[in-house]
Amino acid sequence: MTDRLLSGCRIVIVEDDYYQAHDSKNTLEEAGAKVVAVTATVPDLPALLADGRIDAVLIDVNLGRILSYDFARELRSNAIPFLFLTGYDAGMLPEDLAGSPYISKPADRGTIVAGLARLTASQT
Image (cartoon, rainbow, N blue to C red; front, side, top):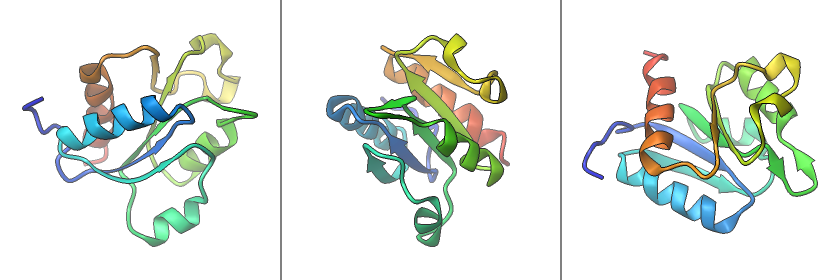
């Protein structure tokens, strides 16, 4: 991947599938992002923010025994853009999160990078 669409962006990955998380991390780093955290569970947002800004979060809906909706709401309340990357249908999103940026798995690398690039570009 030669495009550095995410150059300088600080991104968090919340994904419980090791292979998906690893592939996403590699993809985003190749696109120029600094992946500041990869976690299989809902992270402590204030702790993440203590280490610096977060430009976007790539977030899976189903994290094993819990769904990530409350974390997505926390991100939204902190004006941190996020992109759902999930095997679930968009119709499963609760009403208050309907319309959130969403990509279905499996997704190709270019689609993930482009989705996050749109989110981070809208911040400037």
